[in-house]
Length: 210
Image (cartoon, rainbow, N blue to C red; front, side, top):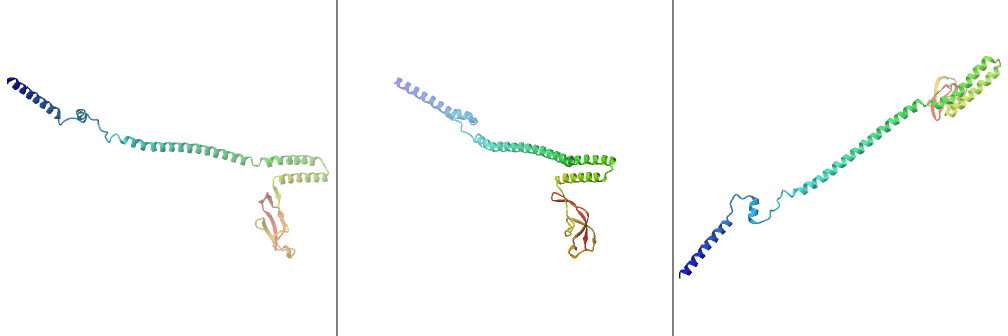
């Protein structure tokens, strides 16, 4: 009898010890941290919302970087274009100044031989007594000069007998017309007018019939 009683008492003691250990394991203190609670429960930490915005931030940063790159490229192109334009403007301004300063070079070169002829004619006048030879020499020089100027685009204006035109003629005075058909027309030319190509460079001074 005593044997069975002792066994029952020992079993009861063992059960009490198991209940006490179980209660100690199941009870958790209120002040556990998140990591401690995860370790106790044997779980895996959940992903929080703080990690997700990383992809969104990267997606927002990419267009900004692309825009900055495009702005830098456009600025570089603008600076290059501005520099090219400044060089072009300076070059054209210099060429324009050179053109203006040397515009008469061709005409002057063409007139130098005429000047040489005049110098020779003046020397001949001092030593010769033949008037006809002098006249012939002057006429030759005049023809040479006139052909030189014609080669540069100079053209004399024909005014006598033509109707008066304020775009071509400058009326000095009016005289009674010798005939009715000359009324309102140029009856005398005081100073000849000239064209340079098709442009009037000197108006003809004329007398108009009234």
